[in-house]
Amino acid sequence: LLGADGAVRPTIFAEMSALAVRTGAINLGQGFPDEDGPAAVLDAAVDAIRAGVNQYPPGIGVPELRHAVADHQSRFYGLEVDPDREVLVTAGATEAIAAALLALLEPGDEVVTFEPFYDEYGAVIALAGGVHRTVPLEPPAFRPDLDRLRATVTDRTRVILVNTPHNPTGAVLDRPTLEAIVELAHRHDALIVTDEVYEHLTFGPQHIPIATLPGAWERTVTVSSGGKTFNTTGWKVGWLTAPAELVTAILAVKQFLTYVNGAPFQPAIAAGLALPTEFFTGIAAALAHKRDVLSAGLRAAGFDVHRSDGTYFVVADAAPLGHPDAVEFCRRLPELAGVVAVPLSAFCRGEYAERTASLVRFAFCKRVEVLEDAASRLATLG
Ligand code: PMP
Ligand code: GLN
Image (cartoon, rainbow, N blue to C red; front, side):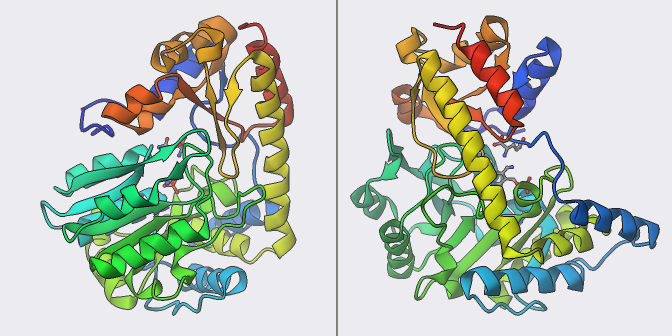
């Protein structure tokens, strides 16, 4: 596997989850919930299996799910998407991003992302022969310097790869930032690929899909997934929406990556996307409470806690506790406090990694009693 820096090793998430299993520590490393999602979604998958929905579905995705994705984009964002030509179902957002970059990049093309960045981006850009340029998100608020962004996007840029709400920082990109990205994409004739898997998990600031901005849709590939919204990270059902010619190009790659995806899970995620709007506001409210519980626990334990406005994650600084090196700290944390977390450096490289060396990402997508237990364990650190 190619790491964010191009090195060959297991991903940080696999390493840290294995460490949690080995030591019996509470796993606040890899972002996955410890509770099932809505019964309607689970039942729909069981029903589909029992009804014999067990053979290869269409490569582009089953019609029910493609229509559900189109209806979802219309209901939440006012985006009218053609379910037959502008939606592609994928093996999670992971495959959507990989297939999109492999389809859109020629060797030597540049891709601009913010830094820190979800580790897959660095690996897939490398696999596609692309060149990865980054623009730092500056702590504590993790906002980009827009002049820096303007200086980094050039005529060599083929793709601006956006992620909002942002893993690992919990930042939600604001409208001026998104407008600057669209304007730069126009000026340099670049495409936008946007990873919005945490679209329903924001705690204050509204999520703005970049495809809703004027002039954005025709050059944007929007990626999302059922994993985070319906607590089904293990099902690996994702999708992308884009203009038809981009979908056709990405499907051409996708068919040789996975060909098609889990047939019975697709109608089940379609059932989830059709749930009432209160379901979606409810999951965000529940997660905001979990964010508060863990952030308060970390603060009480002596960490400097950065505010998380979305996602499953909060970033905290271990330096005030006398731990300047988060990699070392995270390796020892199971033994020190019975908790697993991930160093921010797993999502960055070089100079930025050095500057943020004491930052740690904690996942709060766990039951409240688990977070309280983790908080009392962390309280012994000081
Ligand atoms: N993008 C981001 C920002 C993520 O945090 C994740 C994590 N799970 C993914 C993509 C992958 O999503 P999926 O599990 O649907 O492949
Ligand atoms: N996206 C999840 C995280 O950031 C995990 C995904 C993975 O294990 N690749 O923790």
